[in-house]
Length: 153
Image (tube, rainbow, N blue to C red; front, side, top):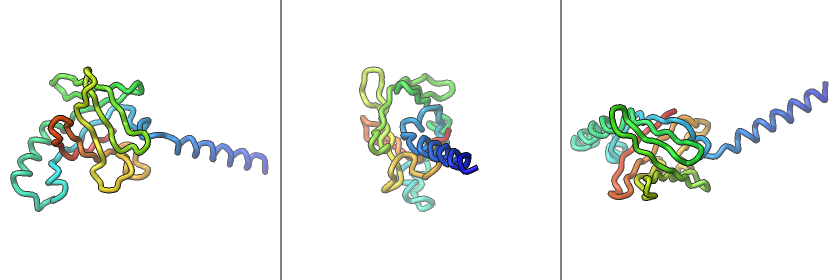
């Protein structure tokens, strides 16, 4: 009986250790959909945001809601919206912090990046225990403009 109990504890400890060692890059693998998009100003100001930002939010929602991003283990991926061209990319995540996710075009030029939109967040997966949701700032590297997006698996 003691032997079975001891073996159960070892098995539980092994499972716990393996599940804790999953990196943010590993969590990213799969297909994600952008479920919402809004301007940074609307995110910060909420209902007090000026009407101009609300109009911007409508354009952002139309442009990005429903866009899917597929991240593959070989660090390649696709970004697409139904009825539009597919953007192929390679990606890189800051393995030390899990904070910055960069997407590069075929020529190796960075197109856009994601960073946590919550001040002090330790990674894009800032909600502990929730690996199927990301709240991030999506920023276009050429213009340095961006918006706040939510992604879910």
